[in-house]
Amino acid sequence: FDNFNSKYSPFSMADMRRIFLKTSNAMGGRFFAEMLKGVMSRHEASKGHKSAAEMRLSIYGMERHEWYDLAKWMLKDWQGGDYPGPVVSSHNRWIIQIPRLWRIYKSKGGPERSFQEMLDNLFIPIFDATLYPEEHPEVAELLTHI
Image (tube, rainbow, N blue to C red; front, side, top):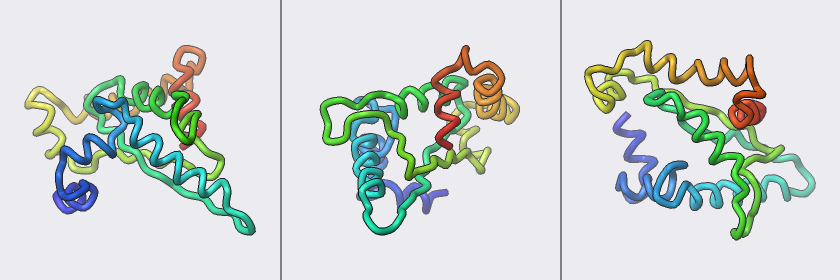
């Protein structure tokens, strides 16, 4: 886990990762969205051969609203940049990573957190969006891209 964090933190600085590679930060994840949309546009523009990607995003299971927040970020119309529109592409399928090291996430959430709560936060929102898409349209739309 420590190797992952150091490898995917620019200059081995967690603050740089929060600023540039997160969907929820002071910039609302705009830099991250524009960077990903640039990569997606290169896949879409490739001539002569089909190119596709499987980009990854994380859901941690710490809060019930994480799926909604991710869907809102992904489906937002990012106007004003080089690549307006949502962070979706027919040349990309999103892979959603979930925590595999419970003890590390438990330490971040406090002793009152339970493994069951994490599982509920990870799965109930997607079950609800699948069963009741009209009540959870953003998450239902997100599910069509993963």
